[in-house]
Image (tube, rainbow, N blue to C red; front, side):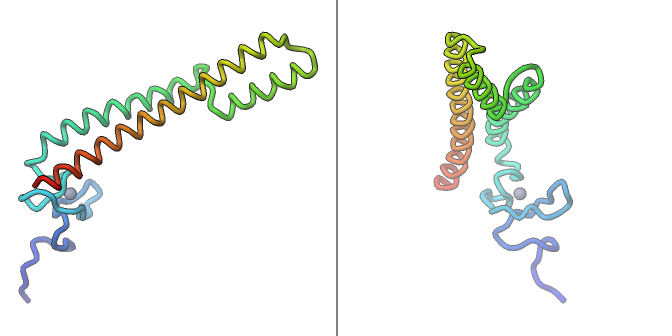
Length: 138
Ligand SMILES: [Zn+2]
């Protein structure tokens, strides 16, 4: 018997904190406490800043999902509306002006969806850059 293991199942260079599921965290150690960026007590302030940012993004997403049943179209539904409108214009049952308006709105809707995706990616990238930057500095 013997050895210098601090906790069963933990590897050197890996976070020794135990996750909510009861398993060792296992993330790369970044702090002198021997823990990862998510568990190290000395990184609490950094985490608070990240989660404030991430929380905003998450709650926006949740809000966006909740609003869907209240009349916001998914991209598939939007495609359906555009398809139906094209058919109606061809059949002569919809005014071209209405079809133009729908086409414009569909374009705007698509652009907004793209912008929202880009915004979310930018927020994630920010978070990663923060982590990478701190690692490089220490
Ligand atoms: Zn950890």
